[in-house]
Length: 202
Image (cartoon, rainbow, N blue to C red; front, side):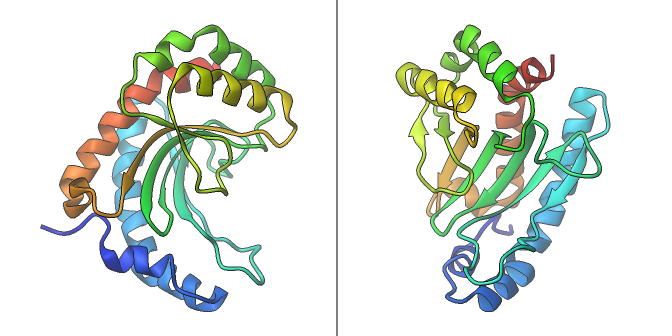
């Protein structure tokens, strides 16, 4: 049984120095991203009945500071994912995240936020989920109505506003000890997020 993500992977995300951390990400983490990403891209393509595409973050614009997180994204556009609603799986130095992500490049931000604000019941039926307001900041919040409303309002009204919803798994979570269990878990999270993804595309 192989680890989904091991102590070595989290250690890679804490490696000092841009070049050193990037090398650790490329050798330790990105091969796992490719393997998990291909499986999950096929899963989403089948579920949605449309071709989805895998994008592994390259952090190409980094010139000084090493990335605090790294991820792969799955979107319905072969050329890129940032403008579109997309699924993200990745890690910080102490947890793994599985998100449905709407980041600041998304041009339908206002419409999506309004739609979500009108359909909060979908969110509130989900248990154990978290929210992030910025994909570059490690802080997350439990998915509760007050937090949800303020996060969605901010996403709608702030030019660089972002909204991510999903689950996080801390470094010592047993689910990360098995690649198979982790994939089953991510597929289950994606299934719960699919109604929100479809609502965002309307």
